[in-house]
Length: 331
Image 1 (tube, rainbow, N blue to C red):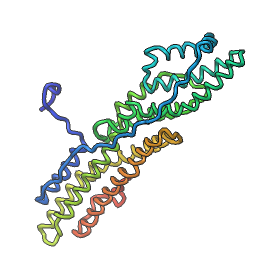
Image 2 (tube, rainbow, N blue to C red; image 1 turned 120 degrees about the horizontal axis):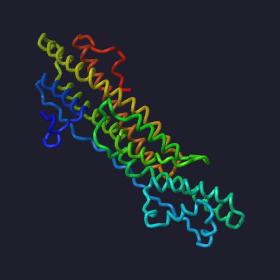
Image 3 (cartoon, rainbow, N blue to C red; image 1 turned 90 degrees about the vertical axis):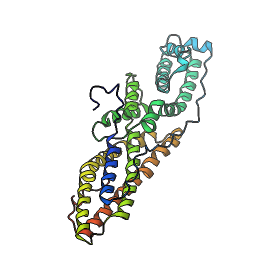
Image 4 (tube, rainbow, N blue to C red; image 1 turned 180 degrees about the vertical axis):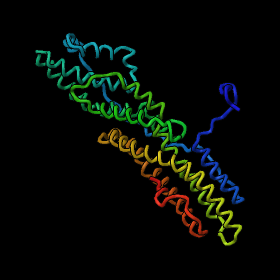
């Protein structure tokens, strides 16, 4: 018993998905009098590529900077050049770049000195050119890397934080090209904290790896050890196996896999859009593509092979399928 003494006891909480897959394989192995397939090493995701490029600083001469003293951008630039300002996180740096572009445009409309206005034109052009790189730095921040690859655990099919994750990534998308009316509503850090806390893509990717790995092992065991149903005893054993299949695969794993598929279909288009049309995000885009083109496809393939084995087994043993014909699609 662990109730009431969680912090002091040695209790270990086993996530639902590994426990379910382990129980499913073990129950089948017990009936087959075979060694249970090993479970469950935590699959590791490949590291996200680092961002190699860095933006060159745009320098302003003191004389020119002083000419901006009546503009609100003056204090913004001054804060950036303090010791604290030079230590900005990627998120705060990106917000600074957006505010700077907006402030320079406002300041330009307030000045009469054509030479200064021409210099501001040059700064705006430079900063707009650098903005995609600044956004790429944001997309490689600690919070985003954690949400995509470093977050621990698996999905549980219930409180997985899909709505918070979608809101966070969609908010990031709104910052890619915020338009002239953009205002900093100070929500970025909150969204980044939620993305890091939920880490739903990382848990989603890891769950698909775990399911495909374990189903491959279980299917191989069934191929080698399952009865041929040539005797009444084997027919009886087959019925027991089907009961385990229904209880743990159909009634338990299938709903969780349905959630996994739903998360995938919701999140992947958002992540693809978020990393599109930015050369600085090319490696990250390829990393995400590998997760759904390779890992998720392999998960679907192993799921299908497992279902096909059961369909062939039920037919061979002349047993009624414990599921509708379309109930076992991997999504």
